[in-house]
Image (spheres, rainbow, N blue to C red):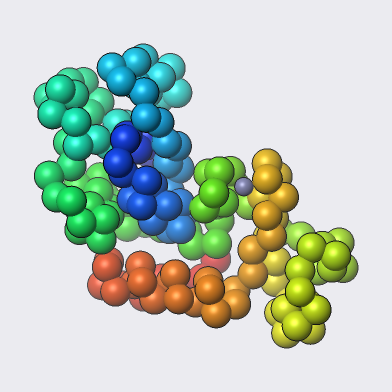
Length: 153
Ligand SMILES: [Zn+2]
């Protein structure tokens, strides 16, 4: 089963990076209650809070750099085979659903509609994703961090 995570406190950027590569990462800024939330949802806690260090299911993040944090997590938890870009909403962590472009025509700029054929949508926030320059830039950023080309799903 794919590993699930919960990013704590100041790890918002890391949370976004994990979602970009398709890893299930929720976010919380709870105090110690995060231990209960994580247990209930079967998630590993990623935190820089020293009070949580050493607790069950907690992965303490040593570095402040999000790029390094992402690399460490992918490496330590061996997520290499689970990387699936374009699979998860960066804003709310939901799995994206492939949609026909005719169905979301009113939600995207005309230029985009004319130039791109593949779209995915978040069932929670309705945000539409396509592989435009913003997406390509995100992929380049993550490829540079992980040092591997990301296979398009
Ligand atoms: Zn969403």
